[in-house]
Image (tube, rainbow, N blue to C red; front, side):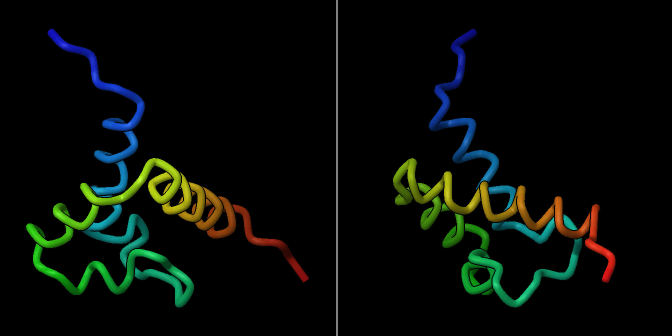
Length: 75
């Protein structure tokens, strides 16, 4: 069995994020919102064109979003 590269792991993660928001309701600053309007195949094709830095940016945004939603700061 062939192991996936780090890039391939990141690509799979981003492809999943392009399918749907993990919370079901993306925030207005979500970098994946516009891409989610495309067909599934178009989303996958777009993701395959991303550089590793672009994948990292999308992943980091979603990790931060997850943290903000799970641990909101009280006023």
